Length: 255
Image (cartoon, rainbow, N blue to C red):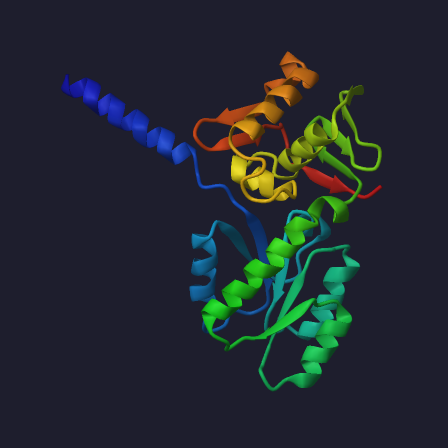
């Protein structure tokens, strides 16, 4: 009896550990750390935002997986506004938040003209900075499907948003608009658990209009169209949502 209880406890903890909270956004911080960054980073993590300290300028492949870039104090000889321009030249289309000193008017103007979307004083209240970051990510994700490159590859899945076509190993599938948008958003976050509420948000629906059983129904129809072999790659995470399993991480490809 005691052995059975131990086994059950092990299995329970294993299941809990395997279902991590869904990541709802990815952030790169480029620049040197500053006084409040540790607190800000922790607050963002508590809100299921994945924050990475890039230090130096990330490459184009890394930027393709990012929702927002925060540019802080300059690293090396590069000024912050120059870093903003470098990020845009690498093809990043998402929002850039520039951190400056409150009295650095020139640096702020140069940064905004070089590609930054917004600015905030680095010594501002940490809660205000966290709120601004979250607001920029919400705006980005609302328009993600429109602004993403027209082709997306996730493992063997190849999706074309211009023609609404899906191909797997040269086999083409005709999906409804709803099914295509569902698969597109699963593919964008391939390998990650996506809650039903998160999928509804990414697809542009108001809260409550396409959640719960409605998402389950849409997934069931998508699986039927894909066939048994390919449908198995859409994994159900009981009590949470779904995940698209692929052999390699997705990559975005500009047409």
